Length: 101
Image (cartoon, rainbow, N blue to C red; front, side, top):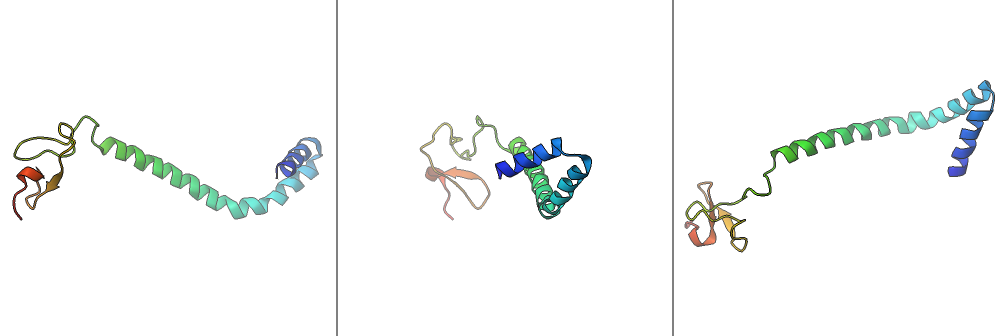
C-alpha cells in the first residue's frame, strides 16, 4: 500500500496534467465509497468530544463527597470503609443508620 501511494504521489508530481487528471479520476471510486463513512466518523468524534466535555463539567469535583449520611454526616471521603445506601426517602445513609424498609 505504501509503495502504491508513493507511486501515485510521484506520478501526480511528475506526470503531465492529463495523467494527473487520470490519477484523480481513478481515486474517485475510493472517495465515493469511503468518503461518507469517513465524514460520519469525524462528525461522531466531534459530537463525542462535546458530550465528553459536558460530562466533565457536570461531574462532581474530586474533593466533593458522593455520599453523605443524613444522620451522622460522615462521607465516603472521610470514611472510605463505610458503605452507603439510598433509602426510600431519597437520602443517603451509612449502614449503621439505615432506616428499616
